[in-house]
Length: 381
Image 1 (cartoon, rainbow, N blue to C red):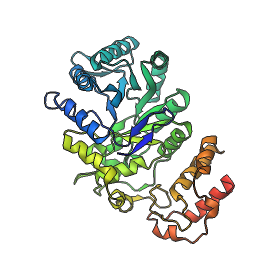
Image 2: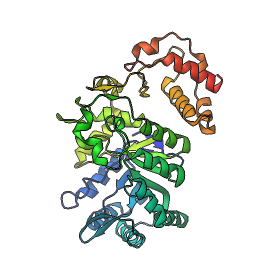
Image 3: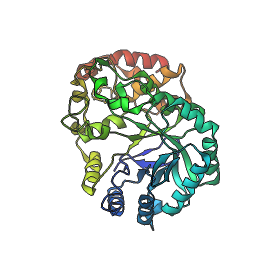
Image 4: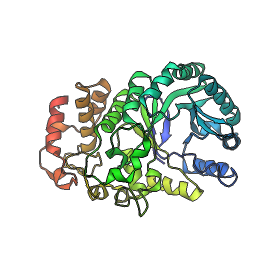
């Protein structure tokens, strides 16, 4: 298993985590089976958005004696009412739901307390005005949640929450199809077939900016919908080209600020299939040819940070240099953290000899030599 730091939280997370979709299956007996498998595979991070009390109780029982081996991302504002799930913005309901959740999970703290499912600007304003954000901050002060998160599908709302609300962890939908779609308050639009029938060009700039803002601000991204609900893997996929799990995971993990993907697992075998990503050959993770063949989509000139351009004869980590260049350009200045990360590279853009070997290998026609020249100018070496 591979591990990354989750933004500035100090949490070291497995790059493969686990969604909660399958935990309730087999009359909730899948919960201990999947957590047993996760521990064996080195998976230490899982999401628990579901509010079903029986599911939460089953997870709590499965965690007995090994709570410290897992990092739990569970959701504030996801409650159980009248026998069904409800997303609430009522402060009293939120508080009661949190207390019930902690009791059922039989834990004193959550590693990430995730404010649940905010896709509209007005909804974010309600979260602030109704005291939900203040409540999350109080829970953090008390040590009952270690870090404050937010789940969203809308890059504009997510960016506002990150920049204004002190959100430390963002749960966001990341895959090469959703990244083509503009911000919307109706997440159904992201996977609507009609939106993939038109000509599409490169990543939506709001989504690109969100990833860069999170990277600069030290906000870790945990990824939902990495397979687009399975549609990217199937024969009737919205992309028009079938991708493998390894390609989808590699794409998400190559976005700035992303620390962990959270694929759902309905069986131990499915969880093992996702975890196998870490041992897969690099050629199996290479998503570039598939993305370049997407019908009606042009990625021309857009760096995907895929490292397909390497190896560089001067050993420059081209993808990292380009990522740091974009972070600096988006800010209009060089944030100190970006400067430090660039300085820590073994080789820098100024060492580029402009041989062009990188550009001959890039499937997206990126002007790599120009990027290296700009990076050398921006960073000074």
